[in-house]
Image 1 (cartoon, rainbow, N blue to C red):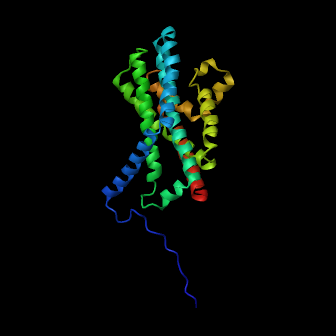
Image 2 (image 1 turned 90 degrees about the vertical axis):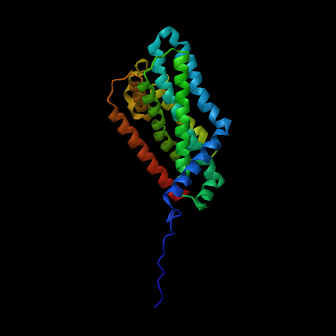
Image 3 (image 1 turned 45 degrees about the vertical axis):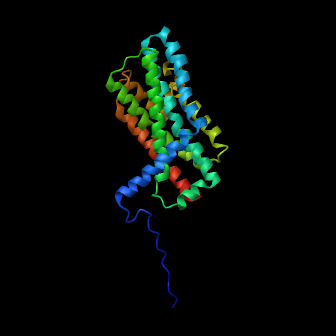
Length: 264
């Protein structure tokens, strides 16, 4: 009788490795991702400049005629607009380019902990989101004279840093669908309409009723409601918006992971 060979799964590269070395490997990958994007001004400058430019034009200049509430409102809204970008483009474009160039295949072959590559990108996006929010806070305080309590500053910063994660999941999914050259255009088709339809550029009350009714479809709407509550301009309960964002992130993360397993 012929012997039957039973395939045995290859052991994980972290099997038997001390916990501090596993953590060090994750931190090293995260550091390399952050340094790589900090050295790419073509990526970082638009992320920092666009929300700052919009807030300068509408939150600071127009806020002087509309009052402090307008500058405070737009601080939250343009903060969400700025936070979306590192999640969508930091994940989506880079993942599409790296898949197309074979870098993702190389990363999988390296003796590194599973998930370190994606964790590095996630931490990079969170760091970029924090910089965006801090920049807008500085402009709001120094130019628009928006007075925020320390608790409100901390809540807005926390909202931005954690709020980037659903857009990381969406960007990751788009990055698995399109090649490097097509991904930026497709993400722009998602980013800009979603921002407008969520009421980030103009208050929803100024928009047609049908757009107001469909606004809760977009994750940016829910993040905006949390940001407005953080600066004291929203009375919504936080947990429904948090649940929507967590569910959105989980769904698109699962879809992206399935695509990566099947298509690399």
